[in-house]
Length: 198
Ligand SMILES: [Zn+2]
Image (cartoon, rainbow, N blue to C red; front, side, top):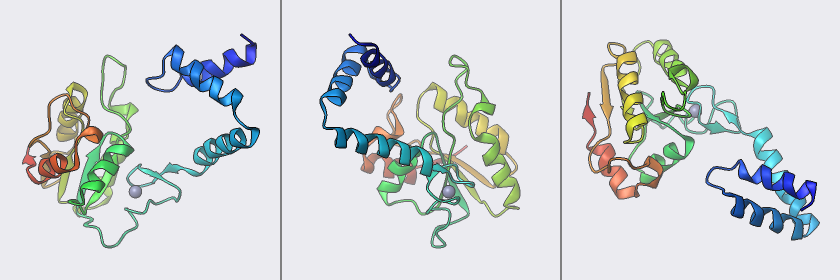
């Protein structure tokens, strides 16, 4: 195997869930591809990497400084739904049952993996609440229903208690150990509507 092929395989192995065999198949596909296709692929990666940043308010992915949801005046600005990842916000959005704003943490607290409250976008959330001067009336915690998600939910509750009138956690129908973005729309809509105060 040539050095450059090994390098390409090593690059693909960095993707989550990609094992050695799969990385090899990806690399083979690339080297057997038409050079225009490869150029298009490289450009797609570069353009996504260079144009997508984090919204300065909610930390969701955005091509502008403020994302389309935060800049939408038709949204209910008094409610913030807190999720772990951008794809979770997208999943909640897809239910069509939510019209508030989001906050994307980009992770969950996990002592085992060395992720503490300072490594995710929690301070940004606290700062956002502080700057809102009481305009935020509810925080919906929609972190994943697993150990890390629960730990993060508890931390958020402690952090924001007495700073927001109402803190709720989505609960109804969400299977334990599930991932928010894998839950079907109907179940997630029920989970949102059946949220409980904590
Ligand atoms: Zn935003």
